[in-house]
Image 1: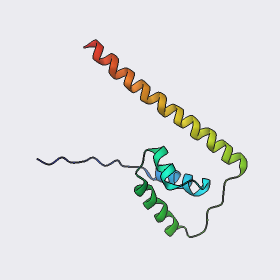
Image 2 (image 1 turned 90 degrees about the vertical axis):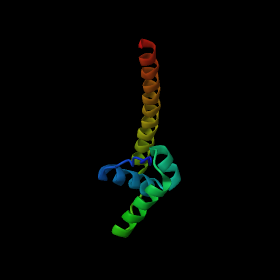
Image 3 (image 1 turned 135 degrees about the vertical axis):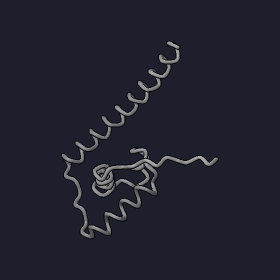
Image 4 (image 1 turned 45 degrees about the horizontal axis):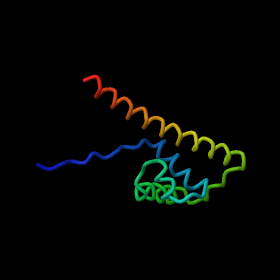
Length: 98
């Protein structure tokens, strides 16, 4: 019996936003992929496909947009940590009820 791996499916909007994080912030594909929980090769493929489809360079973010993006990314990381904690707490309490 073979074990089938489940592939995550990502929407077009998620892919576009991930590519924008790489192109607009100048951060590495590895850094952005790690932050978003993606495989770096997958994100690299998305970036390459975007560059092939859009040969014009993407303009950099303004200082205010860059600061806002950093704030939102920091907030997103905090929410991810809180979500993981809540998942673990829910699992713990579910075990104690049985």
